[in-house]
Amino acid sequence: MGSWVLHVDLDEFLAAVEVLRRPELAGLPVVVGGRGDPTERAVVSTASYAAREFGIRSGMPLKTAYRKCPDAVFLPVDRPVYEAASAEVMATLRAVPGATVEVLGWDEAFVGIETDDPEVVAQRIRADVLAATRLHCSVGIGDTTTRAKIATDLGKPRGTFTLTRDNWLAVMGDRPTTALWGVGPRVASRLARHDITTVHDLAAADPETLVAEFGPTMGPHYARLGRGGGRSHVDDTPWIARAHGRETTYQHDLATPEEISEALHALAAQVVEDIRREARACTRVHLKVRFAPFFTVQRSRKLTEPTYDAAVIAATAHELFDRLDDHRPIRLLGVRAEMEPPPGGY
Image 1: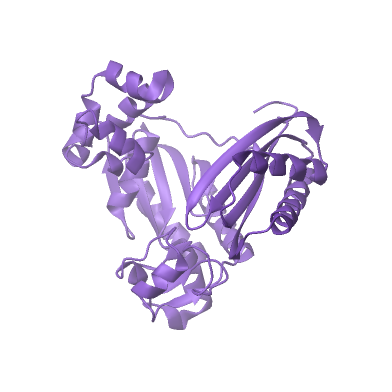
Image 2: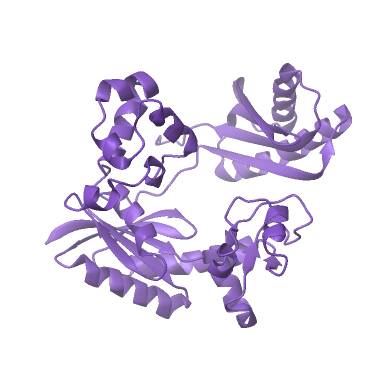
């Protein structure tokens, strides 16, 4: 019996849930995002596989998605429906004998299992999830969380794939560093300055070079990623939020002090509702500003004492904004409240 990490990822989750509600959409390009209006400022949350054939991807502006596929079906985000579907999926995973489940989001989780045949368990999971929810999933099999997570993408859609120490470099070695979980274009660009462009390059990189570029924490972290390293166990400890934030993309740019002040107060009030439910006061205020057309700045400030006062949070966010001394029109504002730790700590 060996210990294995399985990564379960629902295929085109939000779009698939919508197709269950509207079977006539099966096989059509479906885009879920914002209020479902591609003329508004919002981004794609999920695109069906049919929509992805037109180059539509998560995070893309809806307007761009519409230009790529005007005939796509655009639908609004319906959080309660997705949360209910997710809860049913996670309950199905927890029902697998001997499974330890670590939820990563609505549509994905790690499953720890001891077995001599992880492929059989993966197939059972796919069948159980489909029977319980009518949703398809893919399962990555690995000996670490990193390898399992990456293996899922190699098995999509509706399949499984196994990545272990034994086949890691054979499968991943020639792929670009961006194929790694946690390596985006910016990190890849910094790695490329040192002629590190593939996973094999990163696995063989000089540790001192990585520490010099990324620091004593992230340097070794990226080195481990290159080798497929990561946790070999699954942690089912409930996740505890450190902060709650709200942000809004405005359909018309904010340009006047009055508009900005009103928006910050509205966001602060929403955030206070969130942290009151946690019964943990705000200790630090974070501000996010996206100026038109698309330049983003983030700032934060620690409060002198914890508070639930929305006016204090809004005033602190406004002070952070004023210090930017930038008068360009504003496309997006966000306010996030970092909270006191829970009684038992994190």
